[in-house]
Length: 479
Ligand SMILES: NC(=O)C1=CN([C@@H]2O[C@H](COP(=O)(O)OP(=O)(O)OC[C@H]3O[C@@H](n4cnc5c(N)ncnc54)[C@H](OP(=O)(O)O)[C@@H]3O)[C@@H](O)[C@H]2O)C=CC1
Ligand SMILES: O=C(O)CCC(=O)C(=O)O
Image 1 (cartoon, rainbow, N blue to C red):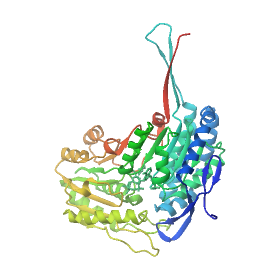
Image 2 (cartoon, rainbow, N blue to C red):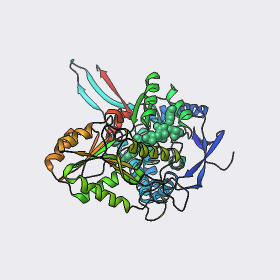
Image 3 (cartoon, rainbow, N blue to C red):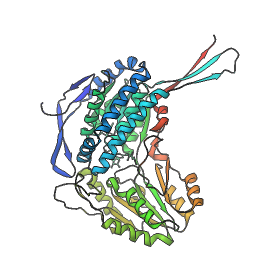
Image 4 (cartoon, rainbow, N blue to C red):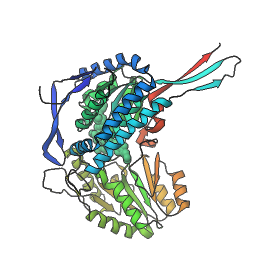
């Protein structure tokens, strides 16, 4: 095969038996590129290369790892506009969102470059006389990375950078829908001087390449972000093969709006959190829980704001919401809009297909009111620009509704009351809590992750990432 982008295995750019087009969701006539798809045998070769490279890489000095990660971060930041454009073209988030995400990926590499210099242990007194105890952190080994399509460069960055920083070797499988950003990131990592086998890129299907990573005894740990259904399979297979694993899955994130909220803030926080990035964020607010006194004003103001949003080609100047990522996600969104109506909720705005100059997966953001919190649209993750509004009599009822979910990723409140804000921070059953801020959109240097059905295993990002990417050793010495 010719004229397509290749995988990177054992220090070589390698071909595969198959290649597939990467389609622009804003314009399905635009092919971003052709990308090779790895086979299970390719994945096994990548795993073997990562294993072979592990002893030497795990013994490199922090300075050596720092210098490579810093080069990666510097190049991403220097090229953030170009990488952001590629991201918007292949995934469909708007150009400012794409550039912002590329910059975030660069910052993540710089953060973990510094973390290499801070890996520390402890010296502890023994309860027995004359014995020294040292507690140290060692790399967990070969890390398999299975990434989703909705953050095509930031999520790979926040998995690859800590894995390499703490001395692990990597086999990276990006989502099949977004090979372009993965390939561009791999080129940057290779250019930064990563030794052969330390970092491997295996683009391909989850059922083939992802599954090979899960099944292999050569992989020590799997970090996964994606759907709950796939997350369950990942967990089951990792237990079978005795791997460490970390899962970041769905959300049905609530935003509570209290009577005392500043209405303008409430509307901006709600619209940004629910609909920006086309609602395709695991942290998106998909449930607005609004107390009686502000309910009608809030619904009217959000509806007015939605009417004014520009939904169009992600690369066009002025676009505020781009297309849905592909036909199957669009079908899923539309089927939930129909389900919501069938379940008796009132569709007050949007939910229909939109035609634009270019053929793409465009839909109008949908807002439902009069939503019974026990119905499926109020309980299942949709992963699109669809939000529901449920009424609450007061703060206590709103908090109970917010927590009444199988998920627990991000939870938000809009209020001017310090009392309710403080109570909510303590009592929201979520890994992340936002006060007067959208549930989506997080910093890159602090822990990220959830509770209940949203997440499993240690947190990602910030220095808490060390919990997953290292294993602790306790050494006893009688001198
Ligand atoms: N929490 C989050 O951040 C995200 C949640 N989602 C949710 O998931 C839904 C479906 O999206 P989708 O992309 O299909 O999510 P998936 O969970 O199917 O995909 C996530 C990653 O897992 C891989 N994968 C899929 N099947 C397997 C398998 N059997 N073994 C190992 N790896 C596998 C995928 O590969 P491949 O792409 O090749 O199939 C992809 O790299 C969305 O509608 C949304 O609800 C989606 C993305 C992110
Ligand atoms: O909200 C964010 O900034 C991150 C969201 C995210 O990681 C996701 O949707 O997978």
